[in-house]
Length: 178
Ligand SMILES: Cc1cc2nc3c(=O)[nH]c(=O)nc-3n(C[C@H](O)[C@H](O)[C@H](O)COP(=O)(O)OP(=O)(O)OC[C@H]3O[C@@H](n4cnc5c(N)ncnc54)[C@H](O)[C@@H]3O)c2cc1C
Image 1 (cartoon, rainbow, N blue to C red):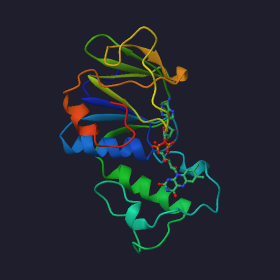
Image 2 (cartoon, helix red, strand yellow):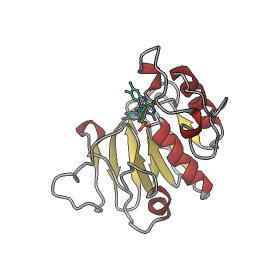
Image 3 (tube, protein in one colour):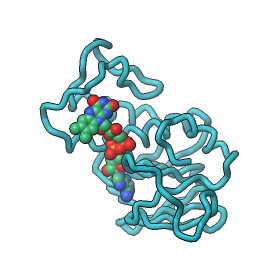
């Protein structure tokens, strides 16, 4: 079991990377758990000819300009390269080939259990595994109660304390479930 982190971030796409950036900016240590071989999100699975619908100036992740002419429309592979480079700037522990199956909570710590048999613990846990509709809480639980759940059930977790640093850091990020 790997312990000692302030936060777990599940999913190494642009959401997970941006969240990690903000958490690190506030001095929190992060374990980012990514199922795939590298933290580049869904982009390698998109079609070859994909070009972004917005120019580079509007496609940057927080803290790093998108490379090249700000008015050009980046290709899918440019986005993958950008995510790769961005991940390197984060000073976070990025654990690839770690698909999280289940997250448990013991009242103090979240533990993410992965398909390799590894587990990672931290007082806060953010799920950034892909865009999802706003989830309901696990059956029988309130929105902010400590809980355990299976990611295969498509349930997202929330940080346990509304006023926690993690909650404050992530609240401005659109689409986050905190
Ligand atoms: C065809 C197409 C074109 C698009 N064009 C644009 C565009 O031009 N501009 C734009 O801004 N957006 C575009 N999008 C949307 C954009 O791709 C998504 O909004 C973006 O990828 C969402 O990022 P994300 O990090 O939330 O999710 P993802 O990129 O899906 O990343 C989620 C990550 O979580 C990992 N993961 C999943 N489950 C687990 C698990 N259980 N444990 C650990 N890791 C896990 C995955 O491996 C993945 O790396 C497009 C989407 C599509 C489909």
